[in-house]
Amino acid sequence: MTGTLTIAGLGPGSEALVTPEVTAALATATDILGYAPYVARVPPRAGLTLHPSDNREELQRASEALRLAAEGGQVVIVSSGDPGVFAMASAVFEALDRAPQWRDLPIRVLPGVTAMLAAAARAGAPLGHDFCAINLSDNLKPWAVIEKRLRLAAEADFAIAMYNPRSASRPEGFGRALALLREAGCGERLVIFARAISAADEKIEIVTLNEATPEMADMRTLVILGNSQTRRVGRWVYAPRRAE
Amino acid sequence: MTGTLTIAGLGPGSEALVTPEVTAALATATDILGYAPYVARVPPRAGLTLHPSDNREELQRASEALRLAAEGGQVVIVSSGDPGVFAMASAVFEALDRAPQWRDLPIRVLPGVTAMLAAAARAGAPLGHDFCAINLSDNLKPWAVIEKRLRLAAEADFAIAMYNPRSASRPEGFGRALALLREAGCGERLVIFARAISAADEKIEIVTLNEATPEMADMRTLVILGNSQTRRVGRWVYAPRRAE
Image (cartoon, rainbow over all chains, first blue to last red; front, side, top):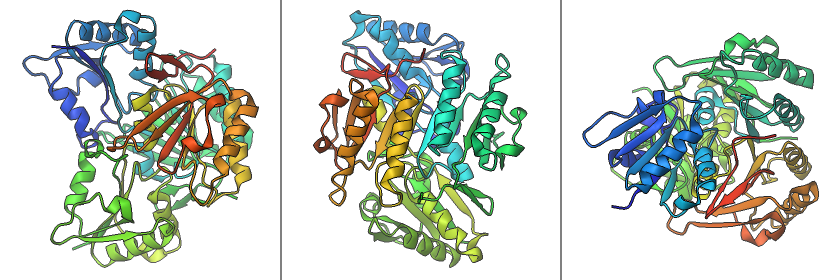
């Protein structure tokens, strides 16, 4: 049997947000690779080998998946959310770029509901107008690049979805990001702290940027800064469709 | 029975990309409202009234949905893709903002796979690094705002997902956007033209910005301009995880 590699997005947490095509791919897989908490979302069954790994091992995991597919496996790499947004799809294509012998393997990327869409839906419609998504982790890019992008995004009046705002190993960055955005004149804008959306311990907090503190986020939090027009109505936050 | 309003995303076209929670909401609806081609994706059945409307009538449709829910209906407004991205969720909250009598209605927003995620998955991983999403329609904002955002997005080195690039009523804007991005130094970047992704007549074209022409897009096309690091490997296009 010809091996295949599928890069699948499991959505933010709830089974009700997993697409049917991802469910189908998981049902016929022989091998599932991914960061351990995501692999743990796939129920074990006969004929399926689970390969959980640490989250710093993306490129190694991608190469291992390509190797297993080349040997004939029906291999699925799982990411939370969407696999193409700050997740495994880029790592797989980087690995493929270094390994010409695997270029002809059948590969599919199956999209999913990425964290910012689930968070936005729970809060209302803060991404209803132009927006950007920035990964605040400086593991793979200099902090100066992050600062430059935040400044330009504020100037463009984008709503700004911030992924990976804060981790134990990088506690300072998010506070600097909040300060920079306040200096850029966004202090009165609304901020949404959306933690573990669609999971049992889901939590949403909505404040102005001036009221926001770094401790309101951890690595399971997705942060959305509204644009200058973003408003509240009742318990909801939304970006009007119009801009002047 | 208490009425409810659900704002649901149908994903880009294929049934395999509709989330189970959206499928469940459609199964118990009494009324479905939306732009006619999206309402046509919901099979008729006894007890369900379909309310298709024109795509220029968002606010009127939102008010009608709130009214039907206030009268006790299980009302679902459908959007293609994700309802929070250039779709119906913002219009509903705008309508709610003008109609205090409906503030206590139970409202839910159900996220979906938005067009840029489906397009990115088909092409590889062009949104694997920081990116932005800009609606190129100037129905609801001045063209000058679009130009300013495109310039700042290019300077930030975001990948840029462009929604609604071109319509019969606005044929010139997209050509101006391409010219502006070339002037901003993006000529050698890769551009993905993704049309009707996940539908039967799906089509993907990948060229450099210098090779791109306005005629390559229509209103069913989602356009993604890669960032400066975006590369090809075989038939795939991806943004490396690292930036310098």
